[in-house]
Image (cartoon, rainbow, N blue to C red; front, side, top):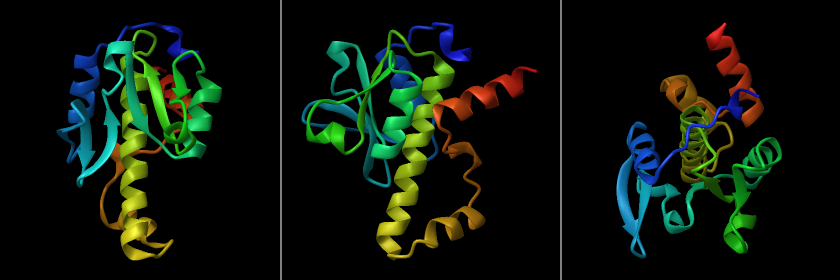
Length: 153
């Protein structure tokens, strides 16, 4: 796999990548750094002391990430994890995979916000046709690997 190349990430790298996303801002929740778009949290460093960054994914995306890279992604224990909150092992993830996972978290958040605000399943697709969300592509881990391999060749 393309992700077999280790490039240990740090909390500072996680922060840099999270804040590089369009509209991302750093905040704080219960004494830990969090990262938000539109006031909604898409990632945190709440488990930084344990070597984790955290992503807020859908349960379906979480299952895909965990199945594809179980040594890197794992559900946060308890109810948060059942709702998609996912640990990322910073010592095991490389920059490309972490950046893609953060983009996936933001894209899912934006599409969810549009749906909740509109109550219309078509609204996220309408948003996508009006705003270029190419920087926030939702890619599952296997699709990220394919895209990375195509970029290299």
